[in-house]
Length: 185
Length: 280
Image (cartoon, rainbow over all chains, first blue to last red):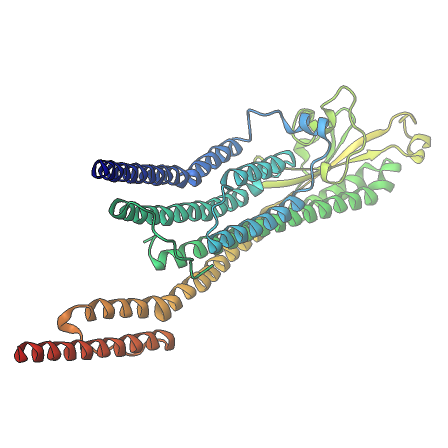
């Protein structure tokens, strides 16, 4: 009777261990899938920015004329003021992105930048200075989104590599490895 | 390339520096161009005011000969494309080009439409609104200024004149200046800025890349090759690479010493094992 109950207990332990392993593997697989889809976020933002830039190139034909907008909202800021703001924004966005890269922080900021850059296009459009400043906004967008895309892609690649190592470890041992604290943090 | 140490160190910094320098230069060029254009419009407006002041007396006296002489002399100046005075109906009365006299000006043409777009023409414009840029019949880019000639008490009260006091504008002076010199200066500035940007980028990105490669990446590669080589059993006595930076040199020497100690311990263990076997 005691032998049977011990055998049953060991079978339960084995099946529990197998379930635990399966659950861990599923969690890791799910995380890898999430990271893979997240790594494309920068490219989606990039594509959206290119679409907005194309609309700006054709002088935003879909939105009302600057005159009707100015009549309802008031005079736009002068172009040189928008240029100073664009310069300040580009500088701070690059610094922020490089800081996140240094700190290895997961941050989903790409689409905000597309919004800010669209704002700059619109402000120049309403100030009737888009022809002279189109390439400046386009260059700022390419730079900021380029750095952001690289940051996100690099972060995800590194995280996927670690997850794959964890996957191998779980397959072998059935438990998660003890995580070493990063020496750079 | 992007996942290697070189890529991780150089790609983001290279993209950020290149992009920021290019954006700075584009914005700087745009601001300078705007300033130069505004200055040239102010200069042309001042010139139009000078012409109006110089011709005022001749207009008051209705001295057409003097007026014609002044306009013709101004029109002969270098860089002046056209000078003409037309009346309220848009008929050219005086011009530096005799062929234009008595011709009707199109009110819908660029430069006229800004005042004549509504039912009642605008009688006063800001300085920047008086300016327009277009290509004339000869294919030259022209910056033109239209300055209204206002009715004054001396005009409406003069015995020789017929302008009623209610008439606000008597006519318009239209002067066109060639933009050729201005465009040449802007083109030269653009070329200089492109050269400056390229040189700055070559110095910063190229310099940083070259220095990092020489002082960091190549030594790390040498250390990596050395460690891979020494892990092979046959090459365990291989000496560490020389001419490394101080930190990496210390790492390789420590590793070399550790390997020597490890080899010595292994040899001693082997001998001890052999001794035990012989005793048995």
